[in-house]
Length: 505
Picture 1 (cartoon, rainbow, N blue to C red):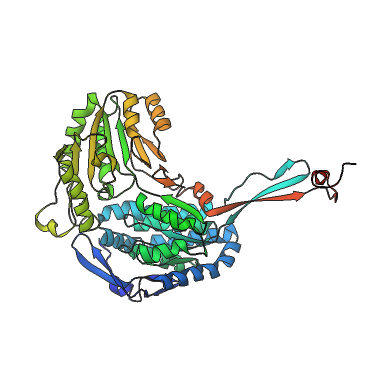
Picture 2: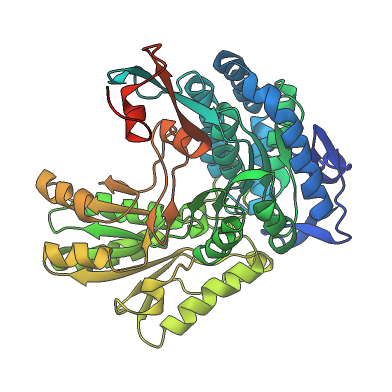
């Protein structure tokens, strides 16, 4: 059953959450939040300006000493309460995520929301396990100790495709490690970030530890990244924008974490379970309407299975049900906007000049035409250097190409600028073992594609960025490692001083 609420009423005070309170932005410009399934505006708010970013950073700075000084156990207790508060709000979070993004409600209910709650529960435990190298006498005359300390105020920018999960991935490791944070969600999808912050406040997170500024990237985003009080920037989004973020962050020499674009290969060897590969490809390509940087986008199929794979994927895609995101039977929702739908359609239309659109390749007609829907699409016959193979489309489009030798399949998988995720499909452990070693990506699945878990890291290589979200590895992003060295001798005139002044006696 739907759990709907009046968005305008819920966020009547505004879409900025600063020092524990909702408030209106001060940029002088408004932003519509649109339901992509209908094209209707569901909320309008005033965008954050630079003054709002300054206020949020100031609030985070004020909150930092007390929060950084809390014990790991105290931070852990707060995060446990936070996980419980998110669980209480699960229905509201799922409704807002589907309304704002067009996600099928079953995806919000079974993936986005429970995954975010699980992240909070994981980091509640991880907060008590900040580890370093064992104390010891690595020099005969000294004892060395490693401290992991919070960095300070973190300024993070999240994308529109997974607003709730990206809020969780940015916020939770940062605050678990003792930092405070200012999060800028995509201005078109602020709703679940605001609910997330309200749940944190209800759980007892001190005011100012988590702040939300809902503003445009060129104004609020760039000001946040370049802010001198911000000690670290974490950004998830396109590689092109990531380069701009890196340029700005370099100006103040701050810690930088980038999770950027992807073009994940899906490599099917000739001994693979064909049925499993077909089902995995359709699920991996169509999750979140293909708006997923780890989505299966390039299927490389060894030639003996190629024709059957193309036929099987086309047949299965034809059964996928497009419809109202709040209908429990809907499989595929709209893209985030008509602009994004038209961008995806343009990629496919250009590909008709050099490849074959096996199925899909158009927007549905009838009642769905008012939304940003696009049919599941399979393209075959494209060259490796073509646009649809090399560029991130970010829609429900899978391109399939054949290969002959294992060497060729792995080489093709590596032949794009990206390196975020990949999968290898085979019954042969040696084949898959080679693929996991040689495919250059932050994650390589074997005989599956997409599952993520809180205990394991997510992050890329090459043009897909660097650094890890989730897992204990994320603390490497959000803590500063400090070496403390104690003299054990109580000797005033140390022998090594003679290398600087005086003579040996």
